Length: 147
Image (cartoon, rainbow, N blue to C red):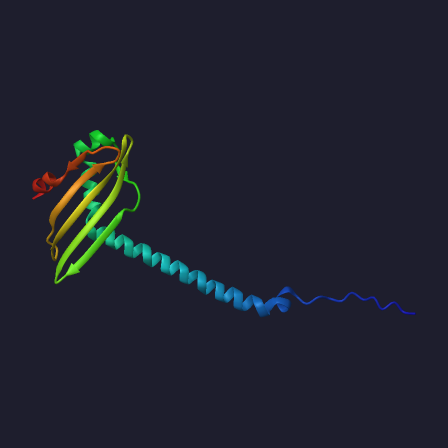
């Protein structure tokens, strides 16, 4: 009796698995790229709103304000994203922004409310509220010095 045990060569991994590898790999790549584009778009839109609200300018002024530095210490930096609201009504733009800030001695929040048409800005509220106290530092005089 002959021994019929021969080594049978297995097909390659690709030949055995192409039926599920192509759809899963291709679709997964498209899904991952789509998620990356959506997340990038959300962050770009959020950054545009943050810039339009004027909170970056406000943070720069707060970082050089001696009264705020005396309370929070130096350096003062942003402590999170905050909240930003921009509304347009018949050509008038109204912004409402709150930006959390922190320093070595404590934390606070910048409150900024502006209104105006076009590039014109009228500051209605511009202050820093210090957390864990009732202290509010009014920054409106800084606006008069700049003009």
